[in-house]
Length: 155
Image 1 (cartoon, rainbow, N blue to C red):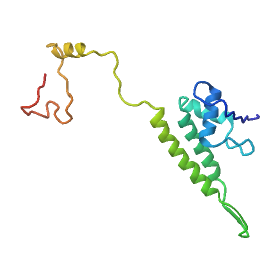
Image 2 (cartoon, one colour; image 1 turned 180 degrees about the vertical axis):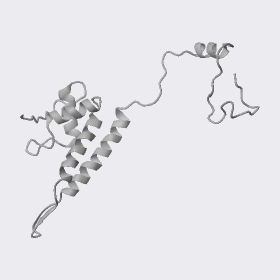
Image 3 (spheres, rainbow, N blue to C red; image 1 turned 180 degrees about the horizontal axis):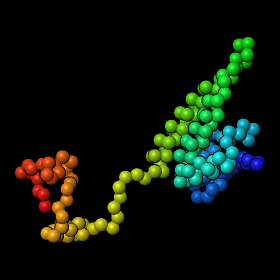
Image 4 (spheres, one colour; image 1 turned 45 degrees about the horizontal axis):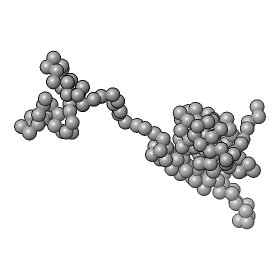
């Protein structure tokens, strides 16, 4: 099976598979055709595993590259020539952490969202006398039944 490698700096983005693939390559620094680090199929796999988030896919790819360098032994030939693969492994591991942080800042939406709730509907639900009372409300430490201060309205 022949694996493919491609990069097009004029086709960066997140709309198409090709744009995402090129963006991941750019983020990882795998843009030199003479020094290929990961194949297209590996990047596409990473994109599939990370719901097409280019930062997470780039972090995945950086960790893959780091793993490749971690398998190599640092070599020193007579003090004149050396190859220190541990530096490359550390670089790509650090890059992966940075890319994950960027992915959290730019591409990830986490937390709780509630849509389509109106103030009038919330008020109507709170005024319903047949409704089971809520076990907690806002004001962090003033939740019934653990708080019984006079300054809190349980309605």
